[in-house]
Image (tube, rainbow, N blue to C red):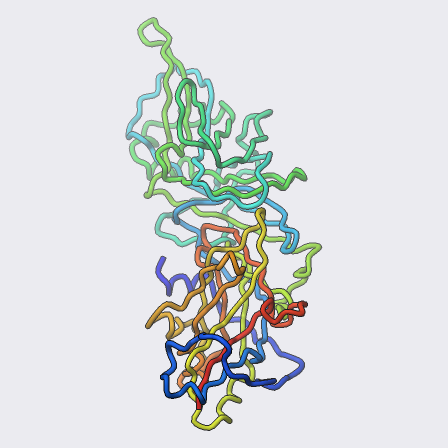
Amino acid sequence: MNLFSFFNNSLKQLGLFSFLSAVLLFGSCTRPENDLGEDLIPEGDLLSTNQSDTTSLLCTVINEDSVQTSNLSSVMLGRYLDPMLGEVESGFYTQLQLSTSNPNFPDDAIIDSVVLALVYDGAFYGKKGIQNVAVHELTEALSKDDTYYHNTNKTYDLRSLVKSGFETYPFNSDGLTIVGTDTVIHQLRIRLNESLGTHLFGADDNVYSSSENFQEFFKGVYVRTENDGQLGGISNFDLIDSDSKLSVYYRYNNNGTEDTTRYDFSITTESAYYSKLRFSRTGTSLQGISESGISGQEFSFVQAGGGLRTKIEFPFIQNLNTIENRSINQALLIIPFDDSNLFQAQPSLFLAYKDQDGEFRVLPDQVVGNIGGTGNFQADQYVFNVSLYVQRLINGEIESQGLYLVSRNSGVSVNRSVLHGPDFPSDLPSERMRLVLTYSY
């Protein structure tokens, strides 16, 4: 997915957040005490160079808009409880394809078992544990030509296809799986009702003349987890791995000898599939978050999968114009974050700005160099070089309604970052979000 598609999918125009109090842009100015930005400053100008980290910042946490999740590298399944952000749930919809056209199913075929196999792709969020799984037959068609988002719903039969007594599965993306006498790539193998195999094998011959005809007969499946009080984790699955498929195992009389075999309904790049996500903020500080967002001055958040993004404004940045002949040598936006083994912060974030027309734009620093944004997990902070953006903003070359922090892999992840806002309760300024300006005049 290209950058501009990402913006269109992830970020729509929202109302402006009004702030209640104002503070001066600079509380103090000091000369630099380290070499931050010295490579950008001419040696002869060092005596007139100042550094400040007291620029006023305004942070707002905003619900993410629709994020595209269709036909990406993986889908997500499961649910877990984030102690700060609430419950996260993901299921997925997918079509099935014929592995061979015009298959010949014996009239006397006896269905032994039906298994939906899903290959883990390694990513996991939350606690690895037991979850209840449900699989439903779709009653509304999917199309490869359509784009689907994290909040797109499709209708389905409410009856689960999972075989009674086989609803509970351990979610663990590590290891290998034994199938019969074979060791295969690790997968979640969901046992379905044998009646599904009977239904599929009983279709008219024309149904099996093409995958398109088959998909009119059987539109696909919706796979989800049921809320049984066990909130474990969310796994990613690689649907287009050749081992991700729905297999019908059956036996039949082959010239007086009982023969056992199977037929696979596959998932390929020609299949339409996407993740469906839901977020519940009940019992958290974000409960009741409005369309315009909620203050992120102490804590702010970025959550992938259509969860949350953070808006950052510099409400008094134009006060720099009162400094005659000033020039911005470097502007670093430093954002500390919390981290833990269970809820690790996102490895990197993306930064964009909204122009006067409400369109999202790439920062000039991204175009001409390395803007940064990769998490430093020793210092527990993200650092963005926004020097050109700030210079052009105060020069009037850019009209901006604010910066937006978003996830880089929002369609295939539910990972989140807990950010320290500009008013984070700490005696250490280094623990707070800040804009470090190095300027000369």
